[in-house]
Length: 174
Length: 227
Image 1 (cartoon, rainbow over the protein chains, first blue to last red):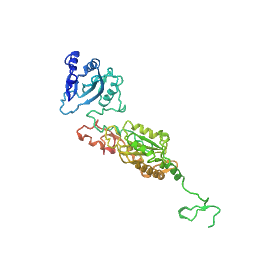
Image 2: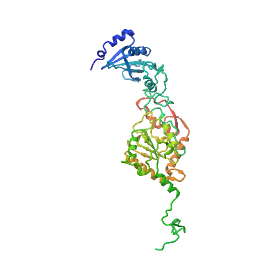
Image 3: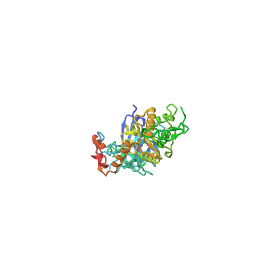
């Protein structure tokens, strides 16, 4: 299994050189290289990765860490991850940023990659994470009158009874 | 045998020998209801409400190997205004349910509904927040087909069952349904008119078994569902 820092040996050094120390921290798992960055500086980092290092957004998603085993409760509850790919070198990079209760929000990256628009809407729909600066942050999968965020860990699998709240049409009515 | 110049004498009521009414040879006497129902049952026009894999089996039923045309139900129409049989094939999610109800209300009378497959009938394996647990909770269903998905023969069987139902329950001026179904509908209306109050429905009672807190607390449910 190739070591991630070996596939992109100069990346971290160059990034620190441009942004300065302390903007992001690094973690590795197998050949995944992950940069952890606070929400306030995420745009700065992502802009640099796009313009200076040729990375493009391939995937964007959310995670709810409520009750996650082995994770300190002091850490933020939500994470948003951006999976970036450099087409020239075929290297992948994962950027993670954080949001916490009660009003989780991270900056929107629609300004960097237009394709992020629907992915951010989906994360908002499922987790209720607000993407600040998003041009049209509406629900994308669930009905507009849906009140909950179904992929949150404190939302029950069978819902809060939404699936039963319809008018009954009997043969007499119809 | 002497031929009666006035034709054949029709049988009288209650086993009397003859009614004194004569009709030409080759005449069949029946009721208007029976004739109309016979016409109806042999010209069902299905509305294929196919949302999932059951729809693929439904297509097989329409094609030549199984050939639903043998039962006069081959005219699949995609406008509800031209249909009298809705076949709900596949799971229905809560975003689709208002659409389904609207289409059902748009169909002209008399109309019938078949719930095809485990998901349409009961939610099937999709016991999640978004999937309706049986479309019969929200629209009246005449025939249920089990299976995941059902064999095409089962769908033909359902059409035959529905035909027999149409023959026995229809009248010239509308579909009143079989007596036992009418009773069921009346009970439904009663349950619906019952006062509702905040509480936890019986079927939600085990939701806290994995340690989740009870979802959003209570919701508006009928008295019977709590008791």
